[in-house]
Image (cartoon, rainbow, N blue to C red; front, side, top):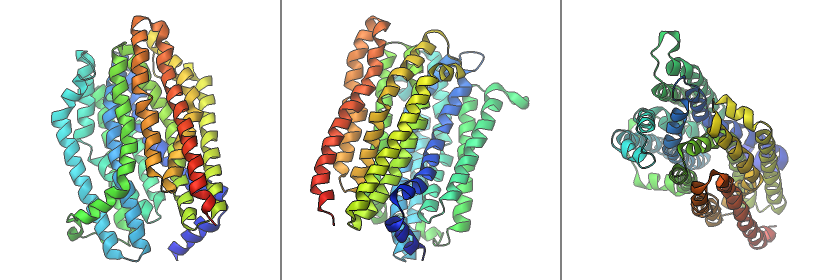
Length: 460
């Protein structure tokens, strides 16, 4: 019955309402993922001593945290799709095996993060900075986030298990609770409130992992209590290469797309570090601010894909076209709103994080210039979801590579050579993002025209 209701909804509900009903929870979920880093940054930047250095340290740690999110999301996406399919087929044993193997993968992923936290953090941070104070703070923060990462790893899995059975409200509750706990513990542990020791950057890391563990535990409890379609037996934890292969056949593209963001940020940290530490700090803060807006677009993209894909399978040209039109329109509206907000409140946002002098001016300059690329970025993100839905995964990947690597790192490096000579040219480095998104949206539009001719127009 539940499957039939879902089918009727996907195939009959007006597409504009369907897009909103599916997209808003996904937007909220994605935006909550940005809370941890932005909250940590807000509190550490206002530390009585070395606030800007602490913010720089978190910026250097950020690419690894993004990679952790990428692996979690990709594994979860594959698990979600395969589990939902198995439940829809009435195959309870296969569904239980998928869930068990996903939990097994979470254990393996955590062990990898643990080993990186112990052995890999120091060389990774050293590749981006030679400032001993920043290096020490970044190592402390990232080391804690990796060694005690079991919360975020297992929450990513339980979140998708709950979403696959139609119980996404519980995963959202778990995520909200974790974010609130992080916000509460940040000032207590960073500044030493309520009789706690003043831990500085380490306090921010501990607050983060405590919030993540709370989300993970709640996700586990909700999964055991409500996911009755799944048998939770130890025998299902036994790894099946076939099941794991099926999970990553679906999830690997999502991992690659998210991992590109991590690679771009890491590369830019190195490029900008050659100009000055204040530039890295300014960029890191701006990037975390813009995440709220970009992640909202990602949430809409994740609604566009199943809607267009379902109706593509039903060969309904009208609903496919409406899915593309409304998905693109809503994404552009979100990005336009984000552009307006950041342009109007650039200076207040920078001030909230305790920035001053050159770093504050650089952050405001980054906000004002990079935000101009938002409409192009929104179109590119929507294109990625549309292409995935229409079996054009290669075109989706090409857009990701172009907008985050090909037209970013080489261009930024070239402009950085001028900025090293004079900071008067720093605006050119920020212009890199407008160039990358602008060129990528041209490529995406060409792909869209080709797909419209070869795929959409041939539908009934």
